[in-house]
Image 1: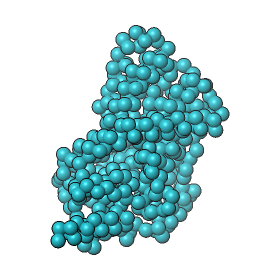
Image 2: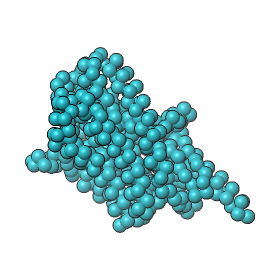
Image 3: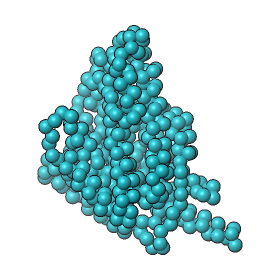
Image 4: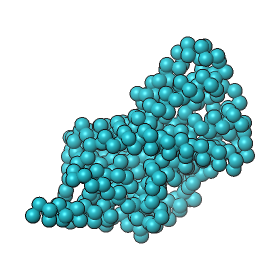
Length: 380
């Protein structure tokens, strides 16, 4: 009888993972099996990371304005896509394991190990090598130790003598500021989940409205200059989180095509509101496309989940390429940057991230039969 129950459970789990898997990553079960959900979300995360790299290849080299997609710079679109997908996945993760300690442990294991490596390698190895200062002078500068605040998600951009000549920007790694915003979203999901439980949709809606206020209301104080960019990205996260509570039947290809058509029309007719249209359209399209399972596309992470590593290292690698080779033709520049960053991202995944994630806390929860949100896989 026990074997029969285990086999039945295994069959249901595999079927649910195939039909409704939420993050293309390894999910450990209490009975020790490992299932890899099959969907397109890994591919979309990779494309988002590459979009950020492509956009920065223009802004950092000065070879021209970054390409725009429906009125939005491509690197900004990649960032917004990350937040939208993250909102959907993180809210789903909480729904499947609504326990504070496992949730925070898992989120910490995802964000910090790779972050620690990129910050420490930058400060200890790359900084003194490329700095215009002598190593002794470099390590005496307080900016070196201020840069370590990135380890606690307090954005710091510059190191002494690093990228201070021949660069359009002296920022060493201009993407790290977004990690603090992401972690705030994690905390918001936890608070909403603890306070509202089954009514979390209302919490995500309120968070989205607060974020919208940050994004739209101008601030006079320089100390609040972060509010606009933060609010903009948080809206995408909130909409993604709301979509995690939507019935599966409302997430369909036909409606997604209509949403894209309307988004394009709004951008063409009223370009000034293209971002407002994207707040709703982009998360919906990404969730519908991500939930699909397209042969070939769904295997984007078969060599590892490289998206976070690409995102963490892309800006820094671009700055190093400029430092070492100057301003190259765009095609040569992007080829070198992408290949180098991909190699580093692969090392980061296999040597750091994958090992850290093996310590994640997983728990399988079930919903009543017929619940459209039933998903057996715990994402991210």
